[in-house]
Image 1: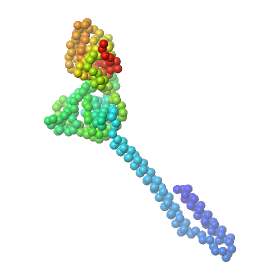
Image 2 (image 1 turned 45 degrees about the vertical axis):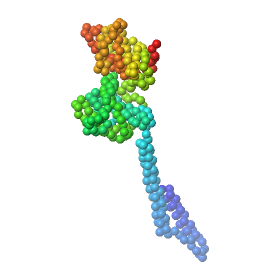
Image 3 (image 1 turned 135 degrees about the horizontal axis):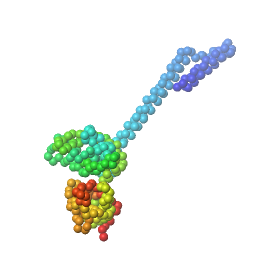
Image 4 (image 1 turned 180 degrees about the vertical axis):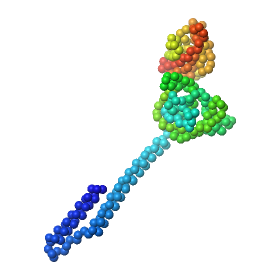
Length: 327
């Protein structure tokens, strides 16, 4: 703007000087060259200023509006775009600190998209929430209401401590939109809550949550007998189990023979069920159903090797990559 105004002043000065020279040096009989009047100069200044102001206004208004429009359009495109089939790590936001994702998972859940339908798996803070219902509490109490049942998740905190909590698979109607989700706990009363799923990022694991089991169906294991490598953790570290272990698949259910390195284990607890040992072969062997492969399974084994029987907590994990048909 400053440059244009300076140029204008130079032009005006040139006109005045030309007019003055012509009128002063030319013959008296020659007609005088018209000199720009003060009114003409002021009018030109007003016109120049108006043009400049218009140009600045257009720059200041048009460019931000164009940028804002482009940003809005891009956001709408992202919001409207359907997530492709796959898995995503998302934020699971609730309206209450009493109903929230377990702290080990850092507020995250695992969203699965299949054929356009979305479901998020979330691990809660404990086992005290027994059921969820996609909708309002009053509808959850009606006959025929389909409740969401829990599964047992193992979460591991930053200090290394692991805990079993209830996890749920929750249908998600839309990303970044609140929806109703009712809960019922050990007190037997339904409560209304609002939740939202947002910030999906492609991924297949949630912080603090052990990897999901691979089932016989996932691995396309037909009924039969197999072997698989197994690892044992926990206790004093002195005990071990035979690896590979014998695996049986019957009607899609997987059974594993867990054989300890001694005959001093008389029973095992798994998911609240007690299993007695078979010591006929000289070692303690337990045939138990397992949820699947590639994730740790919590067990408790009672040993009689001490002065008094003592229950010891362990975990076992069966490696799917090592599965072989038994010969």
